[in-house]
Image 1 (cartoon, rainbow, N blue to C red):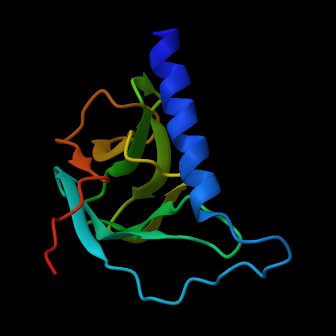
Image 2 (image 1 turned 180 degrees about the horizontal axis):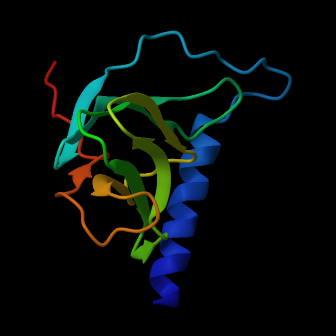
Length: 149
């Protein structure tokens, strides 16, 4: 396992060196519009939906996964949106990112900085606001469409 980690660290460092700007050069700004990929998840009378994309802030090498949208409910109960990120084989805990009681909408916003292909994320909608005991199916936040040239 140590050899694998060392090999991955060497590959990442070489990639960083290959893309680094020369000394004294100003960091490049993100110029291209991001490709927005739709996402949605639901449970009961609540639906969370929106778009996700990658952006690389000025002065950064690794991109950030940006997830934005809204949680909409039509009933009187409470619902919440939860996200979980995995880096390599390590799962981060589920985190509540939005909640709504009663009919209406509320924003859903989350980010994962320093995105690599070994990072995966998922989002789900649950009944209630404090736990994930009663939830709908999760949706991927890191499955990207294949595009050709």
